[in-house]
Image (cartoon, rainbow, N blue to C red; front, side):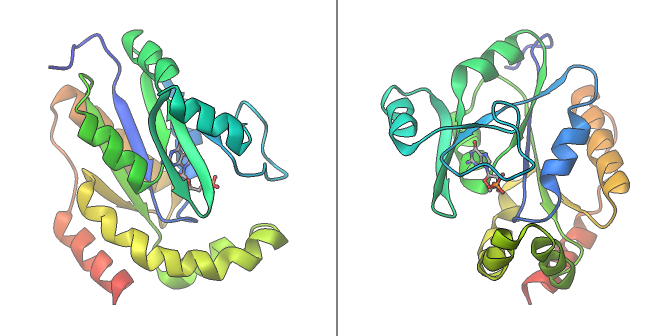
Length: 210
Ligand code: 5GP
């Protein structure tokens, strides 16, 4: 049973370009919320800071961490490795901090299946439409533009994992989306009533996948 004093694990996943990283950063500004910084073998983007956005490591170092069993979860995403080291997460949770994870569905599944003694709330963020997603993916730097089409194909596969999450949130407006997530987190922590329209979500997913 999770202890009342322990922090809560909050996972945000989404197909690439749905705005999840921005949301995680906004949520991390709340008192007592901290982001779990992942390790990755991907090259840093121009706007990214090492040890803040990610711990950027080479494949040899990543494999060493796997061998030493330091990862709580790890996965290969778009031909790069990404992983969450266990110790910093557990330390934060034991200090009563709520930990935010910006990870893909593979990592979310792994954490869920571990059945850790901490409360877990998972969110799957979706774009308002496929057209808007393509626009968002193409608006990044030139190198990313080249992989926007590849990521659109991936979208069709990733979206199917919505079913394994506690809540699906549509990011049509970042502030609204942020408030919905905060309200659901508070409702989950305090056993309050939840403002969540599962029927509307199912209809939206049908449109995205048709
Ligand atoms: P990006 O390269 O755009 O920063 O991230 C690509 C994907 O990898 C995103 O879906 C992101 O959530 C996911 N990701 C980032 N860190 C981790 C991690 O530690 N573990 C897993 N499983 N996925 C991650």
